[in-house]
Length: 500
Length: 62
Image (tube, rainbow over all chains, first blue to last red; front, top):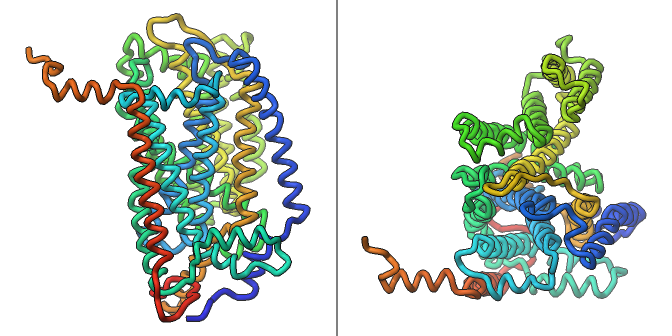
């Protein structure tokens, strides 16, 4: 069997890993600038305590926990999607498998950091284990997270193994010795014989089967941190599946953004990650958006109609109160996302419709943003109910015209539109986690209501977290190919066999 | 009313879920089992001997 990898493939996939060019160092510098202020403020928090945040009783969880749940969520889709696509033998999965699986590992690593950030005394972290009891949902979460991180890392490593051996055999002569040793050690003496391949494939399939329930369990267990309490807004049986749906939804969004980032970073990857990936995964994205709306409607409708004494104030804070901008902002973003995704599937002749003019769309978008901000800021001059109603009506009209106006542009730009939709989903899902946590914590049962707003420390550490996540991504893919070389070769072999 | 805590089995369950440190024992067992399985799987894969062709770039059945 002859290798199908051409010299050009080698140049595209392997050579960039050994070039520490200006682009790489610039990226590292920019990400460091984003990350460092937060780390400096964390050191300050370490010395001064959690008083530098807005965390206080009863709001003992804030932005850090929102980030934790969000990161746990985005980490799910990578490995689970890769596992499902592998089990179903979906061919277009091959170039994106590596990035998808690595996002899970990196997401979980940064999620773990949030727990440490949230502790006033991180030196007491071990106490959670020393005194941990089986009845504590936090222990279930630690168990689930650890197991998922280990299994996802193992899945990533299995998938990488043949490529590490390939790197071992393809390392340029002028490469540093430590790097040669690194590939040599990590390849575990892989020779690529028939039996090794057969065993590797069996192991990958077995791990794929195991990963799906572990992934679902992690997101369900994380929801149990809330739903096993008696706090209004949390004690809900739907929270587990709602978390899982949100996790897959936001994870797909991150996958789109990460893959696009990788192809922009190394233009040669565009030859491997084609529009087919965007089009096909786009269908799953649409389905997930509808499922997410279904769960959100369930959660909102039931609490709103029953108007239970403790539950309703939490929901009212989201619908009309201080959390309304975050709640409606989330819904607006999700509606926009769903429309963008649907627009990409509409017949192209829609573009000729006079309603679908980009200029009209941009003007309407600006007007919609302004009216939304005016509504969100709750300006006293606009308190008269008639003015508010007019503003609300105007926003709805501007929003619809904006989406219709930009439809043509969305259709003509598959990848940028998908990235915009993904960014909306990520931001919307962060807001969703915020909307689950904060209204309940500020409207806890029995004790007086309170407020919470993240301080500079919390905002900076949130930005740092995403900086760290990107930094790990960039550095990792300077050492390992971001596209699974052997998977691409196997795909080509299959195409040739089928006469493609 | 038969209060379940009168039963030794339920007393054992109560001890099991309420004893500090047992949570970490469970996690240690879980992590230990997972690590062992992963290690053995890796060993099983790389130890495969085949006298025939080596250096196959992708699974031969493709």
